[in-house]
Each structure stands twice: as structure tokens, then as C-alpha cells.
Image 1 (cartoon, helix red, strand yellow):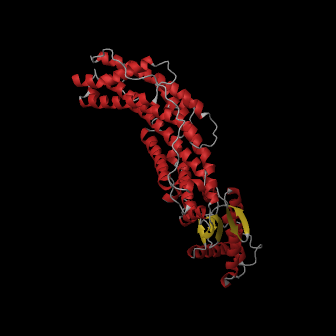
Image 2: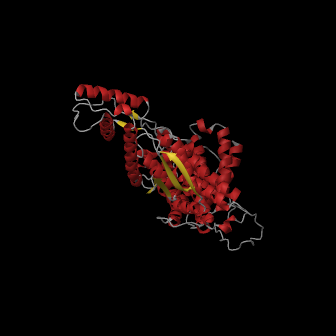
Image 3: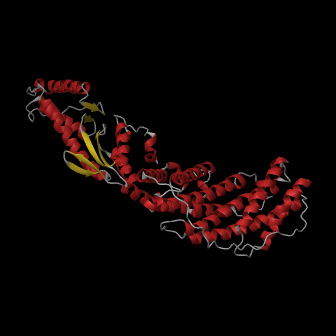
Length: 504
């Protein structure tokens, strides 16, 4: 155990310093947190090598060292966020992030002190030599950085500003609509926090979402850092600030979810009694939901409009012509999907039909367009039937004969794919043969009747024209090519990966 004692000495020294500094408002500073994280990680690895995880006596000591490693890293992240709040370009949000960050640091200071007490107690329990040591730390008094080196490096020129701006802004919008991101940033009532962990908020999911925002930050630095593009579009600095802030907040969320699920909720009851946790489980959950998850959501929502305006600034206007939805035109599902694509990009897209203009962002406007589509369908089927000589015969006086003729006509229309049946129970009873003069006119009346009660629809080659931002139109064309999310009978179909943001 001589090696454990040697590796424990720096950690115990740091714990004693923490106890002496508990009333220092500048504690813990980043220098202390760096040392505590490094030394506790070394000690944790050593005791794991000796099998502390499966030993009744040493397991509590090992868990307390793991808490020191995690909470030192967690606290460092929050201290970094406090510093970044004054450096990042950030839009206004509903909550007071700076004030909340200060409160969280105070909570974490208490947690570090609790951990330090526990490590010393557990070291005694494990018979690790805990003689007094001289701390090598001076009081935590970080001086603010007031001097900056001159920014005299040359920058590279970026020619395709619009392309890069739109790419990054679109990536952020896609993240904001992503189902996993929405699941992680869920807004839960305080009495429902424990019910949300680990489903839907699992460590795996939070870590994956954190990684995606980290990747977006890396993309920004790869394509924009050391270039003149930021001088050409200042909004990019705000995008970078929001992406980075969300990433750092989510890194603290990952630590909190990990500690709660791995080190608190999954332990045996008798094991829990051996460990003094740095915070109570309900405090961990409250901190998780009311700090990193809440403010990540706030910063994400505040940057959505920013990204949409950036896209609009570099939008290219274009036109596409696509068929209407096969199943009943623009009813609820296709209309909602179209409007959500337009809203996703925050751009203006118009629908044109017979020289009438409709707003593609409004489902109600698309419903109005559908009324015109249905009127066109009725006129087309009436015109087509009026040109069939075999139907320009008088309506038979005998109702049974008339019903038989109608059944034959409808069978031919179905076979020719002129109409589609949604219900095979077509009731031709109660035929009034005195209303229409020809079988063509009578057939039109019954088609309109069955369409109105959703038993059939009229096949049509009607197309519509979308005009607007090419990025929105690209997605609308993909949607149209995939049946607007439905098959010919109105059953929902899986949307392609490019439109995954519509699936949340």
C-alpha cells in the first residue's frame, strides 16, 4: 500500500487546502481544479488497478476519488462558462445566465469541500497515512486578464462567404430541430425531474448531443478561423458564441447525468450508506435541469432567428414545379410538412396554382389551394367524361339497369387509374334518373358525391409551382419526390434522411 499512500499524498494536500479555503469567495480557482482533476485521476486509476471497485472496504474511497475527479472537471467547465459570458457574442435570453452561473459555482464550491472531507475520512477508514502536510498552494486569487497581445497575424481570404455562412447556419437549424436534441433539452416540471433520467435523458444521449455541438464548433473554426469572413459578416461571431456556449453547458450536463446514473442511482442500498455524496440526488437533478439544460435551450432558441436571417441574406431565389400529393392533395399532413420546411429556413416561399398565389408557410393557405385543386380535378373529370361517346347516352329509366351501368363505368375508370377507391362500399341506391340527361353527367354527380365523403379521389396530373429560397425548395422537391410523406392510400411513409428534422 506504499504506492497508494504516495499517490494519495497530493490529493490529501489538495483536500486540506480546500477545507482551509471554504470561506474564500475566489475558491476554487482553475489552478486548484486542474491539480485536483489530475491527481484524483491518477489515484483512481491506481486503486482500480488494485481492485478497489470490487472491494467492500475500498469501494467507498474509490467512489469519493471519482467524485473529486468529476466535480473538479465539472466546476472547471462552469468557471470557464463564467469567463466566456463576457467574451462570447451572445444574444439576449429570458434567464439570467451570469447570475445562475455564480450560484452554481457556489454550490460546486460546497460540493468540493464535502468531497475533500469525505476523502480524508475514507483515507482514515482504509488506513492510508493522513499526517498533516504543508499545502503548496497560495490563496485562490486569479487576476483578471487585462492585457491582450496585438492581433497582427495576417488572415486568409474566403471567397464563398454566402456558401459557408448558409452551410453553418443550416447545420445549426438542423440541430435545433433534431429529435435527440429536443429530447435532451426537454422542459420538465420540477416534480418530474427524476422521471426523465435516464429516459429520455440518458448519459449516452446527452454525450452524443454534446458531441454534435462540439463538431459544429470545430467546423466553424476549420472554415472561418484565421479568415476575413468574420469581418464580412459579424453575425458569425454570435453564431460561434451560441454554439460554444451550448457545447460547454452540455459538457456540464454530461458530467451531472453521468454522476447521477453511474455513481448514485445504480448503487446498492448498503453501498450508498457507506458514501457521503457531494450533493443530494435531488440537488443534482435540480442543477441539471435548471442550469445546463435550461440555458442550452434558451441559447439555442435565441440563435434560431439569427440563423434564419443569415440564410435569408444569402438566399438564392429559384423555382420548382412538382406534382400535388396523390392522396387528397394538400390535406393536413402534406400541408404541415411543407409549412415546417419553410419555417425551418425562415424564408419566404410562395405556391402558384392557376396564377393564384398562396403562402407555403401557412397550412391554412395550403388548404385554400387544395380547394382550388379539388375544383380543377372535378372540372377535369367532367371534361374527360363529356368527351367519351359511349357515355353520351340517356340515363336508363330502370334504377337497377342504371346502377349496373354505373358500376361498369366506375370499374373502367378505376382500371384506367382515373379514380382511386378508398372504400369499396359504393352506394348507388336512391338514383334519381330525372336529374341528369346523360350517363356522363350522372357519373360526374356520383364521383363528386363519393369524393366529398372521402370514399374516392380523382387522379390528376396537376402540378404546382414553388418560388423562393433554393434551400427550402431543395427540401420541398425531396418531399414531393417522396410522396409528401404518404403513399397513394394516405399511409405515412418514412421520410428521407435529408428531412430528418421533420420527424421530431
